[in-house]
Image 1 (tube, rainbow, N blue to C red):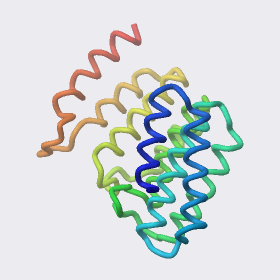
Image 2: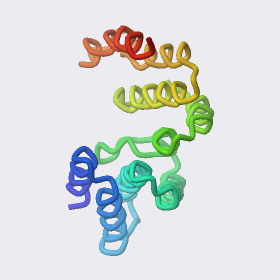
Image 3: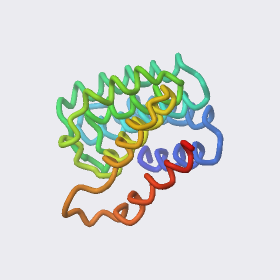
Image 4: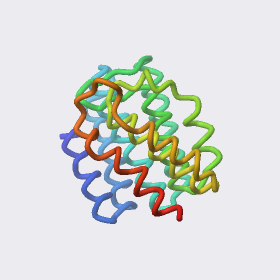
Length: 185
């Protein structure tokens, strides 16, 4: 049920309902904690993933307080897990919390915070290519907000697949720098 609620949160967010998405994520995480308990790595991972999506949604709704609260709860869950992993396909762990802190900072217009946090992440520790790309694209957004367009372009280039990767993004990411050049005029 809780994993399904992650899909609902994604749908609400994509549909332009960030505050409702944040509320659904927070409620689902709370219900999971109360109904099931947070005793296993799998449950903690789903719980943390719900909190992270809720934090991003709250930031999109410009609810800085709720975003911060949800991030703090996710930090506590990641601390309990103690390491990065991909239980229940969540990619939840301490590194993923930092990746989402970057997303939240960008959504709230805190460019310097986003870029500084992104620079603390060792990209080699991010096992899921989508998360690595998300971090680099959010870094590029932060750099753009900060007016550092050349560095943003470099971040977009680093969002591409690793050498030897068969990631589907390998066909898309090389187009981004050309697109970026058009946007930055």
